[in-house]
Length: 154
Image 1 (tube, helix red, strand yellow):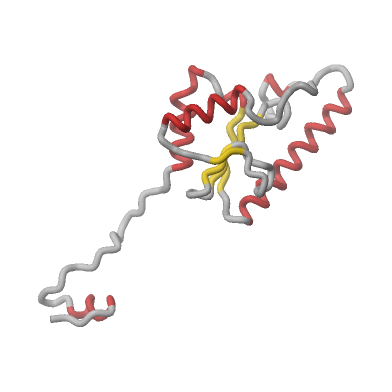
Image 2 (cartoon, one colour):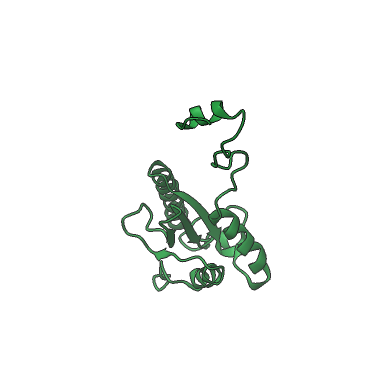
């Protein structure tokens, strides 16, 4: 298990390729942010973590089953990883960053479209409804509006 890398994994490449095909650009493994996120979008202040189900203790996933040998060691190790993840998520929120966690079991060719929708929804800012930010054109009866806007009426 010591040969398993923490970055540039096959799952991470899959997600990065998908994000790039959607037209988004990103930064990798920002060391200045808690948890050294896999994919960062500084413009949006958003982060994507691509987490392995085993290493990050994905509850209910068959990939997160602990090995039968040295079970106590693995249990403690995974619990420490999960605790560290929670601390990093809290620190990121305090710094004003939003994050999305993509699990290894979500990354499959069959689920590519669904995953793409999830990522797009996360990265696309919500549309503002209501006020457009435009001032109405000057004309009869709108002197009050213009006064509030800092200009004089006709």
